[in-house]
Length: 447
Ligand SMILES: Nc1nc2c(ncn2[C@@H]2O[C@H](COP(=O)(O)OP(=O)(O)OP(=O)(O)O)[C@@H](O)[C@H]2O)c(=O)[nH]1
Ligand SMILES: [Mg+2]
Image (tube, rainbow, N blue to C red; front, side):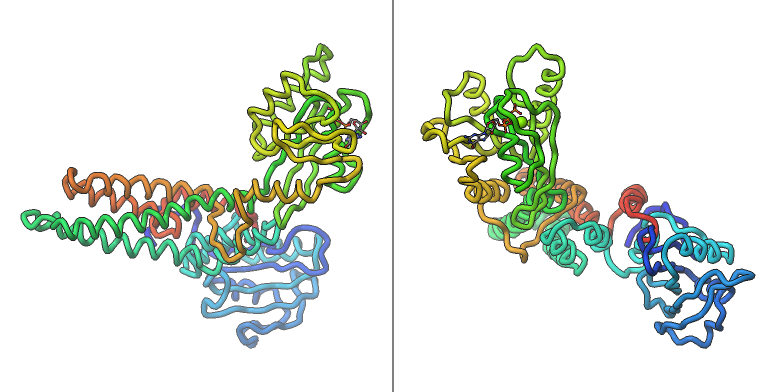
């Protein structure tokens, strides 16, 4: 690992509450660093030297008087999450856990910074950078896909894939470097072809991984889905029907919805943020105008739109315009009252009679996944940082491929090395202090 300069202090002993704040039955206070056992020994009612590693002992945390009844376990020889000497204290939850922590800090530990335990684990080679990031993703996972994807990343699947690319590129770099060292021998046409074929295969694999970010991001953050259309077409009714609850106000007055109404929804294992908007029309009424302005904004920001049209009346010119620009699905509502016209093409539903909703859910999933839903075995990248690194590496490699016949090999070598460095940013073999600090700083205290 090449770290340019570390943003976190190292070598001292840190402590934090590793469990979430609040009135839990149990809280875990983690102490990590060279003095962990000595510090715990000062405040525990029993002698830690006599407690074998990785066993639990009952006792008291004492600071003049008894602070709490706890279970305590020492972890020696670096066999711990951080790879350092560690002591974990299981105290009662709530305010008492903070008192135990205060006692630990008074005995000589330093309060851990956000992400500092995981940072130390990374620095001690417990896992690489993409795995460290997966810890955070796993904890924050909102659905089954996100959990599965984070677990795969934690188990090192992304790391192995990226290391595979690195190996192939290193082999190609060796060929280019030989060419730099012995320029008079040149590259034969045959080996040039072979070189290009291998290079394009690697680029193809990297492009597939880069593109998996589309799905990966949706898995991670969920998808925002915006209901838009003219007033009174049944947007709010459709929202309530999809949610199967009475969330948004529905009346027969055009212009009922003024504000954005948001609600979460699960769809095929994905987290969806459903947004109902004010019906779009020319209005002089200031509140409604502001609502319509927000509708348009929400529409632009949404990942996917559902344009709702009313099958029981002719379209207005404005609706025809919306239909041309919609990013997502067109839905003909009120099909219990009338057959929908054939153009523009859309799905026939009735929000009040609850018809066509299953088809709508199916079509939404198809649009979201751009085709079939992926299998849980597929590998996704879920971090914009990884996508950027891959995109940068791909750009450098394309320069190598394009310049092979015309550019001098020194430059090609430099591009190939640049691509390798970019890949190194994903697994953390080439990272700067800034990147590391920003990654681990996003963690919570105690992780
Ligand atoms: N027959 C029938 N009526 C519907 C259907 N969906 C909605 N409506 C009625 O249409 C009227 C307007 O419904 P809303 O859901 O408030 O329409 P909206 O698009 O949210 O309207 P705004 O908030 O004013 O933009 C209400 O009287 C609903 O009961 C449907 O599928 N069939
Ligand atoms: Mg409404």
